[in-house]
Length: 258
Picture (cartoon, rainbow, N blue to C red):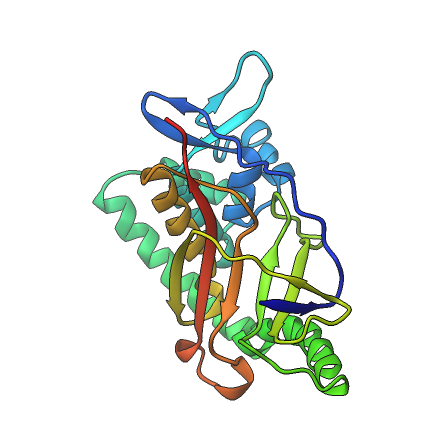
């Protein structure tokens, strides 16, 4: 199929580097950064400055850092506590706690934090519609081109993520809408073997979807061979309920050579 897009984007280099140690596949710091939604600079800060989360393995020959897939759960836990306005020192303390008593104390603290945050920023909270609006601006430009050139839409909007790691200043994201006509400003989007996951719910849940899909790919002996992409089955502007949004996430894959 052909995809109308805002700008061209070169195929990103494959930076999904893995090492197998003790039978467990590792994630490079770049891949761990991308899946976890945090910059590599922040990960190094967490490791070297405050000891919040350290690489599972550091190659002594080249200094490359590798994280285990299981450490994604710790990173997401850190994200969640930060969202409730815990300081990094507080988070470090909670990560060191164990046992039922610690869990109960954390639960009570979270409840109070949640109440405080809701009372303070509830009117300013970022909604799913706000999140979608950022992408909607780009898709709107595509729809305007499609309408002015009288092109035929052949599918729902999609985004392709070319960035090798998460970058808060802006990821290399390609916005596309499938059309039938091979006109200027389009390119063929080739098919192939993909691992697919479907999310029904808020876009803010996509990070966990990516982590689970990445874990499945590793455990089943596959490797990511191209940029992941999302297909938005549900138009957020036609539904006011985030729990009804349907998003398909695709990982182009190939079987690893034994």
